[in-house]
Image (cartoon, rainbow, N blue to C red; front, side, top):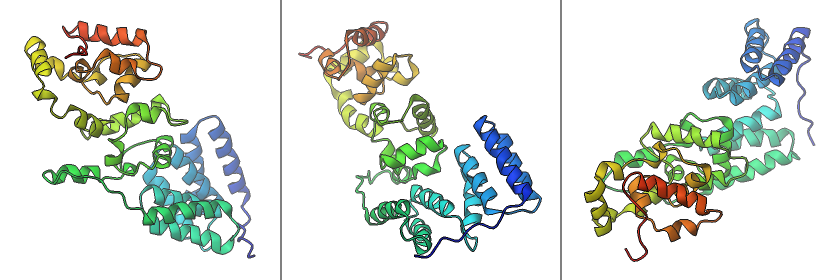
Length: 305
């Protein structure tokens, strides 16, 4: 086995800067930690350990462009740190650049053939290279299809949110609008903060979570006699009110997301039985949603309606 190349011996200035950056990071002072490392680099030292730490801090701080530039510098060193190659491979995989990701991992294995982490990621990358995902498209709207093909790595998300989406195999905006809020929140370590990030990013593109499922569910609803009667009673503006604009409890919000409901009108087209069939949905949440409808002159659809 060939031993991985060792890093050059760091100077006292580099050691001090790294120690200071570690301390600042532990105190959540990321801007100060980044500035400390950038000062060392500006002074002329391009030690790989400083570059690697800086790239890591930029990454978790959400500055993808800057982090990528530093990682690119590292991987082009004659003997880049293994960790940097693996991290950059993951970033390439996130962006669907499987060939570049594979090259980074192959460089790791060329000097450390027994590196299990690199082997695991290489299998994932090879699987991604061979994967073909079929996504039905609306031939009449090429602009919309192009938007659905945009990688999720192109939207402004935190590292935690991006990693969760990657592990759920959500690669494009088309993948993302197929899932509901409830499905995302059911994933381990995925919280409300990441959910809010994603919803904001999608809303900027006039998209929403569960949109594809909701569109299929709502197809033909406007021709339904019951919906027509509701429109006469309260008006279309009330029916089109987004549920996202209404303050709901977490449980009620997750229930509407689970059913792919986006508007007051879609909620009014549901029966109580549909809602009560959702796991952990109780009478308190049902009353909350019923009051929401009652305040707007509506109610749930009767079972025989």
